[in-house]
Amino acid sequence: MIEKIFEGLIWRSRFVVILAVIFGLVGAIVLFVVASLDIWHVATHTFTVITTGAHPEHFHEDIVAGIIGAVDLYLIAVVMFIFSFGIYELFISDIDEATKEKNGSQILAIHSLDQLKDKIAKVIVMVLVVNFFQRVLHTEFATPLEMLYFALSIAALAVGLYFLGKVGK
Image (cartoon, rainbow, N blue to C red; front, side):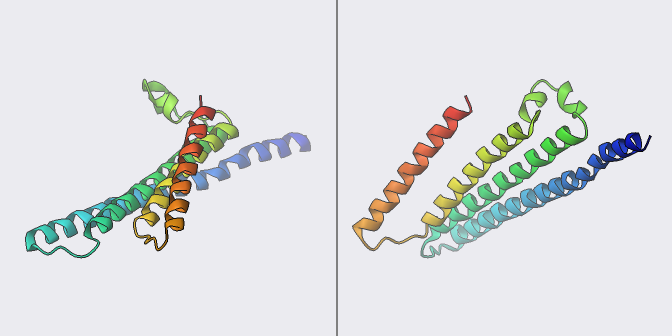
């Protein structure tokens, strides 16, 4: 009898993960809003520069960096969504709405922790790639050797993305 009560208690304790689901979704929504506001700021700044006729130094790099930064935040928000959906499906229940839609069950279907880990890892790698290119925009190269290192780092990223794509197939 004690074993049955204890096992029931352990089984129902899985609902604690609902906190991770809720706050993961809240975090994702916050990141989507912040990224959208960042793009709005870039757009309004660009409009101001165009209408005033001024052309600040590094204007193009700043615009690209701002948009890439927003893309970075969007990707992190996607990680949070995937995490929230995956944890919910693994510990609580399948999402009925997702199974009703034609593509819904494939997009966020998570059936194991390994699947969740793989989906999150792929998006995190993309976040790192985007973040790398955002930082490179403001890098100034003083020697040809630094340019070579830059080229090698891009080649390493390309090779890594190639093999990441091969693993998923």
